Amino acid sequence: MPRRSRADLAVIAVSGEPTRLPPPADLDATARQLWITIVAAQRADHFRRSDVPLLRRYVENCCIADEATKQMRVTGGPVVATRSVRGSR
Image (cartoon, rainbow, N blue to C red; front, side):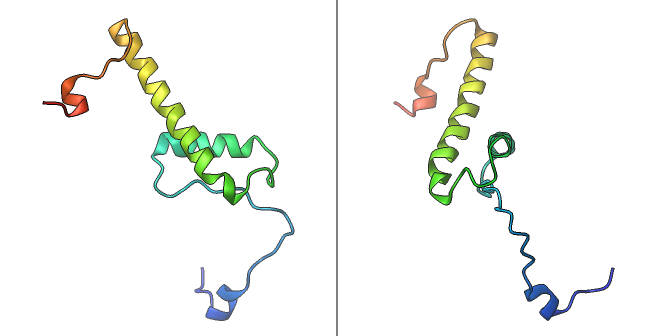
C-alpha cells in the first residue's frame, strides 16, 4: 500500500452518520468491552460527550460488582475489607 500524502491525510471523510462515543483510552479491557457493548446497543447519536463521566463510572462499577460476585461465590459469603486492604494500622 503506497504512503498517503499530507494533503490526502488532511481530508476528512464525512458520511453524514453520527459517530459512536468511543471509550476512554485508559479503561481496562473488561470495562472497555462493556462500554462498547452498551454504546453499540443504542442509536449512534444516543450518547453525548457529556455522558462520558457517568458512563465511565457505570462500566467501572459494573466490573467491580462482577468481581465482588465472583469472590462471594468462591468464599461463600460477602466480600469484607481487611486491614491490609484498607491500609489501617
